[in-house]
Image 1 (cartoon, rainbow, N blue to C red):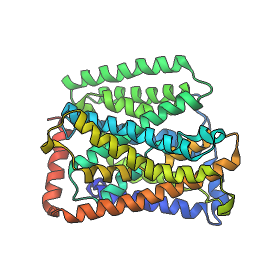
Image 2: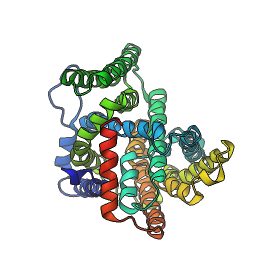
Image 3: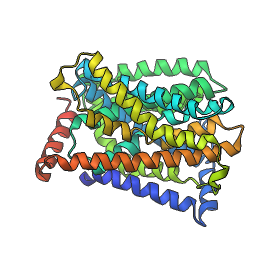
Length: 398
């Protein structure tokens, strides 16, 4: 199963699943697919989710868990271990949220401004997938910046959902979830002295599932449970879990997520009948992200007094900013929540998200591909050996 760990292979499967989902949703299979997505399996432990939500709220939490483990590694031992480097993606993420929101508000009348959160999100899986395919020769720091920025960006988006769109927040569940985070942290520390203990591994898994259940019951988007568990779990059990879960995530979780997320019926609306919401989102995603992330990322390095020789080149920041405009899944969710009382605006918003994200894929992918092609290619055998050694070192907790 080593082939499924290859980032290019995983990204290709992800994008193929997305294309398949988009085609299926706009074919004679659309009615059956829609019925399947809205089918509710038998409720269990108070959880009553549709098949689509089991993927986007359940399985996707596993991907966020793995991504958070990788982010923690980058923050502690990898490209972002230096505090100044770690602050750059946080500053860039704030810029990448603020600029699209301001651009959206500037392009729509005041009565439509409630949709401003829609273009603020970045789709981690798709952005990293595009980078893996076309930017394999780019520095590791580029992927680290995109990963950190996208995770922080999505945390901000989840926070916006909780504040603006959650109508039935269960405080007791949030408090219990916070306590369960502490339990996950404590079990991870115990694991360090008893590495390889299967009872402890099972206990950690149960605690993570309980954390997910509590976050789901709170009314907050359940994927935040994966982020929290991945960030607090001690390195030894975290890397062991990442190593075992990575094939599952690449082969099943992400393709299913991509298929479900992309299975969106393209609305048949004449261009002249579209509201300003369509144009605002279609522009704010690629342009707002480009301006916000680039400006904040570059100025952040200057403000933090990062030595010139350690600064990320402006071209690499621009590449990350362009890929950051791939909003897709979270933006589609924001669109449904922001316009749930105006169905016609959901149609316009959906088109805006699809167009804005597609522009970001094409432009960001082209720029990343050109910059990658200009760098000396890394010998394939050397890359495989380096990746294998890095994976072994991380799994062993060295």
